[in-house]
Length: 502
Ligand SMILES: [Zn+2]
Image (cartoon, rainbow, N blue to C red; front, top):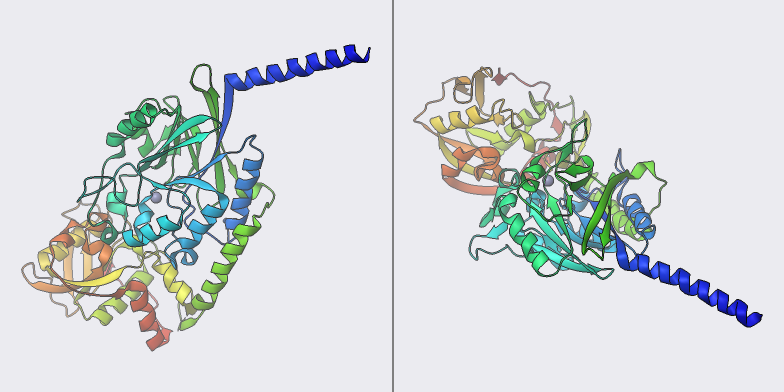
């Protein structure tokens, strides 16, 4: 009787495990966890949960994925805050190592720091930086330290992960850090690498892109990524970034995912792979908002973040000056902050004129104590300042491009009085330009102009600067402004002063 029972039991155990085995053989679930545009937001602040809580949610999702998950970054992860910028992104790299990222796409903000600094970051990173469309002009190959793709073997299946970078990098990235590099349109190179990883046995292909996507009210995917997905085949998932949106949908049957920004959300793709068919059966994409979940803090990540933020606090809370009136900053219109600091730069560099891109003046300055942090908030993309020569005609060209250009934030300047009619097209908007001495701008005269490195290299489409002779280079914008404030100790600037009338 005992024997018979054992036999029956053995039969059942065999049957159950055989069924289990068959199911396993037929299909396999692959879990992908994604993040993008973390931008070094280490602290819990406002809508940002902070690195520890963000990492805690990723760890939780991974622990709930049977057999584990592959964690991927879709770019612009390292820099963007004082905390992370102080060491050119190293704190973010260490945090991503601790979380266990397997790859990160190269975003436009990879060029916030020099290529040399990115190489140092890449050495510290336990994961590759992927981009298949950034070319070194000298070698005509993918620029070091980037790699076009990786193939990961996970649960016995080869997964090809191809990095792609937004074409907007050409104009949006810090120009001085991109000298010698060419960004190819991602849709031109994508298929070649898809075929290459398939040729090497990849059964699942993921585009890990720092390319924009968005979802309209009816759920349709729009944005730059659609231009890429229209041109490719044999892609199982497109992870996207750059536009800081929450996206989970399909475009031409290709699942598209994006998880917001700043650690506020995490994306997840569940890929059902059929071993029998040798291909993906279905993909389910979704995102979770970190703050809607309980705080599963990752202690290791919390320690790394706290060490950085406490050090930064000490340095950046030093009071430089007292500000009497708020310096306002309407990024599309008038900016007292832009005017005041352009005046500071002109006085420091002793130039006739200063131009500064409106997108580079990011914050108002509240009344009261002005600290190093305040100035870093105003100029988060601080760059070396340069002095160059320009003809009056070129000055006018810069104004035409920069005043109420709908693709840009309003151009900031000092040393000029400008009257414009923004209802007219570019090229006919500027009605009158007067110098500080009241004399009109002379087209053929030469002027000494101060600006930042970004504009001097033609950033934001200001190509005029590229033809100008650079006479000298000075300190960074932040250093120039903080040094000035340490000397004057007070700011007493009330208005936008009417230098721009439109
Ligand atoms: Zn971006």
